[in-house]
Length: 80
Image 1 (cartoon, rainbow, N blue to C red):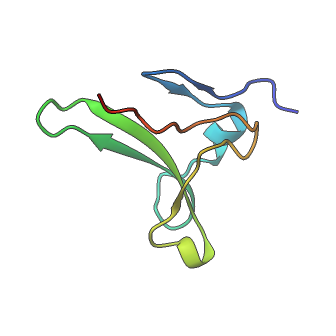
Image 2 (cartoon, helix red, strand yellow):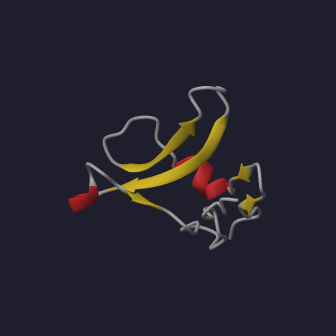
């Protein structure tokens, strides 16, 4: 049983222990982290966790919920 859970706030995503351990730096497969930047300001716009496996190895699938703790880890931003 995991002691921590993922937390999603307006500006930050904190990961649970299971998800932190499973993120891979290489893009061959598994769960990878993608960061979208605003080129003009250099600020992070969004942090995505992408599952790459099987038929989805090339493009991947964005995870909306943590597969380890079940918490929501992605929320579509509302545009004004």
